[in-house]
Length: 436
Image (cartoon, rainbow, N blue to C red):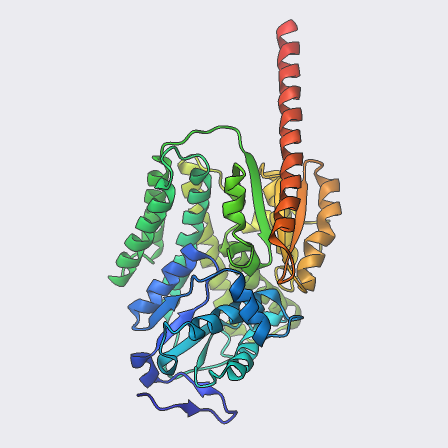
């Protein structure tokens, strides 16, 4: 059994010995993306499990070990970890946890410290926590990010965005229910198998796979009836996580909607772009700036491949990051970049401009930047586009799900009235054209 090793500050380190013996638990956020990244970790010898348990008991566990005034996503992630450790499914003497650590001003950088405090309180202080970061914040001898691993993980984000886009635009209309989801699972396996063989993550392979992916989703039989188109934006965890947003996507599908969720690549570009702007304003390491510039070019190229594939196969393609950035000029300043910052406002504008004028903005309790850049910008967005139909939904342990869904239903009722008015106007215009 691996020996427990601590650093000079008393932090339990994930050692090389532990890599051989331990199972790493990963929190769930975006299932498609995280499934691909989990498989990448497996290819490099890390035994890992992507946690999929959800339900009200997760929040209750989180409330027991995390102060209820803290960030709601932190409460859920920590609750999910401790719930898993308490479940009896895992040998707690051979289990580690992994959590991202950004190093920015958001409280997300402190999740790892809240988690360790909660583990101690729950009696699991012998469980090591691995920080997944590219800023050198914490290092563990048993876990390291290599260049090939990072490239494969980035490919996973690209593929995840494309699969999410194609799936959302087919699932709402598919004639054979479940066909789109099944194709997603097939592609996750195919891509994982390909990357395990050392392929699938070069630019040429990604471009080829995205084209084939678009081609196969375009072959799904659809019944393209008129549906309410709804975009989902908000804080990154609550926007993507079914646990965080009470299965919002499923609810909207049940209400007969087509759902559109901006991809994670846009957020990645936003974060890299911010670092580049900081360097231009305040200076810094020239080598780091050059590396980030290359990363920006690479992500932009990958984003272009997703957009190209969508357009080539008859799907609605999102605007590029650069185009989306231009859309908020005069609405919100680019200096507003904490959390999702101006990108959150930009995603709402981009969705509305592209026909998804009905928007659900998911907001976790206590996330001030999210409230400023989302709820605080609704009036300005409506002045810019009168078609905007936006509802802001707060998510926290004390928010009843029925209240959240009723508010969304009210937004959908307005959307239905807008569709009726639009069809009436079209019929009137057609009648006038015939008369002339």
